[in-house]
Image (tube, rainbow, N blue to C red; front, side, top):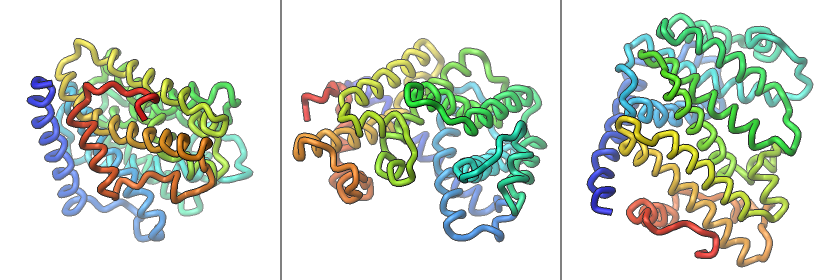
Amino acid sequence: MLLYWASLFPASLFLLLHWAKWKLYRYFHFELEGIEQLNAKEKKRIQHYQNGTQYLSALFSSLGQTNELLPANRKAYSTLAALAATFDDLSDLPGIKPQNKPEDFAIQTDPKLLSISWLKTCRENIPGENAELFEHTLQTIFSLETQTPDSDHLGEHAARKGGLSVLLFRCMFPGKTARWEQEVWMAFGAYIQLCDDIFDVWFDRQAGVLTEAVKCMEAGNLTQLIHRFESSLEALEKSLQDQPNARRTQNIIQYLTVVTRVCLQHYLYLQKKHRTLPLNDRTQMVVDMAKWSNRFKCIQLMVYPHKKWSPTKF
């Protein structure tokens, strides 16, 4: 515990300084091309993605395998976040005809054609050593995003898509992505995708989106979902074993872990209280991290990670 606490502070400081650096860059130096064509909802959506990718960039830097982002790389990285947000929304549109290339898909679905312009910006500024991996990863994500998996393979489909999405952002950093590092980011992408699905159960059900989390909770298999979450975390930690700066990276990941566990803890409480989950009740199912009661629970789990997580505790 002393070793953990001693390493937690510098890791937290590293994350805070990284976040501040990105905020200053976006405030003073970056303006997304075509942003004047977007409405308030679209801008908010892109901002949400950009905040998430700031966390990703901190993880890339923490592992120490990347060089500092140059101004052009930084612009491309921020633009890629906007492209990801837009593409996720476009891929959910009904009646979309299958396409072989992202550009053809954008022509069909994006009347403003901003996504084509953003993709061009990314390609022009990607480090040359990662250009081939970027193109292969992008095409694979596109194929996965435009497929509808059967209910028996929801987890595998989401894990692969999440892993490749993280790897795509890593390609924007200078420094060739080694095979072992690709394995780390694939494992982390699978993990963060599952966390996101756990957070968004109410929203996904309202949108008619079937995820592994939704499937488990509709079937009353919350314990199964928790086991799936812990298995994903274990696979991620295994991929980081014996890697340089792994402890700092693990401590940064710990922030995401405790927030997800607090969310799962809340679901367990609801199930115990109602004997079933009130899946249609937004006020109960959405865990608001703006509430200090939830923040305090996160702090508790962050400070005392040695307390083993199990459904029977709650």
